[in-house]
Amino acid sequence: MSATETAAAIGAGWRKAAPDDVLILLPMADGGPGFVQVLHAGLGGRGRLIDVPASDPLGRPVTGQLLVVDDERGRTVYVESAQVCGLHLLSTAERDPSRTTSAGLAALLRAAVDEGAKRIVVGLGGTGTNDAGAGLLERLGADAERLRAVELMAATDVDIPLLGAHGATAVFGPQKGAPAAMLPVLEERLARFADATAPELGELPGAGAAGGIGFALFALGGHRTSGADLVMRLLGVSGSVAASDLVITGEGSLDVQSLQGKLPIRIAACCLEVRVPCIAICGRVMLSRSQAVAAGFAETYSIETHAGSLPAALALGAAGLSALAQEAAAAWQISGADSG
Image 1: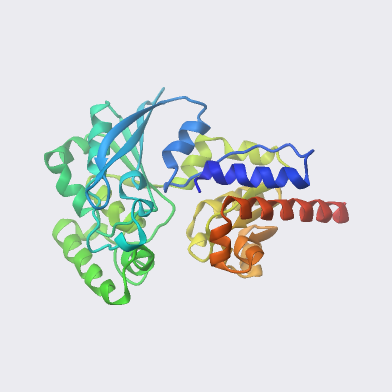
Image 2 (image 1 turned 180 degrees about the vertical axis):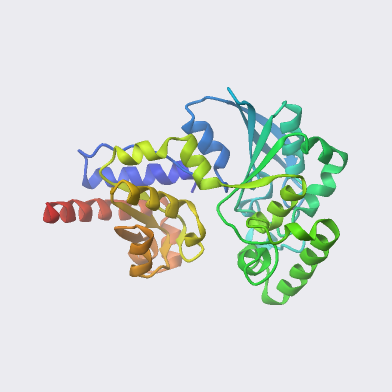
């Protein structure tokens, strides 16, 4: 489900148990899937969407979108790598990071420059690629020099390097379809490409984001920013949090990777600052109770636990999320009454 669909499902379930609560739905993204959609909606229509023909991780035609926003600082164009490199664009059988490519992102960056961007913000995350942006750089060709003339920002929720035990291949390769035997091959490919391109950039935080697209953006002169912090700032999240009695966030899997700076952790930290309780409603929760509390969550809820198994949770979809939100709303009312 998209962030918008997820927020709607949680809101619908919450209202069944607490119809008098005033809910503010604020779909969020931290650079991965939904980045452009969330920003466009959250900015209240400020900015315009432009469709761009591109190609998916296997070279098939797909349409991406630019979000063009003009303000006192000049023109900023927001781009979402997942729209053309996303894992969701591939069937389970097609998930093979030895074949997928980031080349499709070149069309979006080229179009952003053509729109007169002063800065380009590229949301990174949720990709099915692991090529260190080699496909992107190759497809750009001479247009790479045009990108060096604008401010290029890599908005990402992770700060991993390109290589090593905590790099792109080791951390995210398996979920992109790479079996154990493929991982050393992929790592070697990335190492050779980095050595031939800009070896000093491979250790930078975020170089391994989106299968190493972060590395390619750094090679183009870009720099990293927290996707979560950027979206929270643009959408005025801190003000919304301070004005609330309770904040609900979540993600597919709340786990140790989440602690590396993903959006729910940023939201929880924001809540801690102003002493507003925060709960997480997630597909599954892999953090211990103490880890969750330390991160700032008053409580966590898992659809996997609610449904009895992960396959059952996946089968329930939005209905399962709504049912769990209804349970959370009832529990919170009881908890609030007891503590008051």
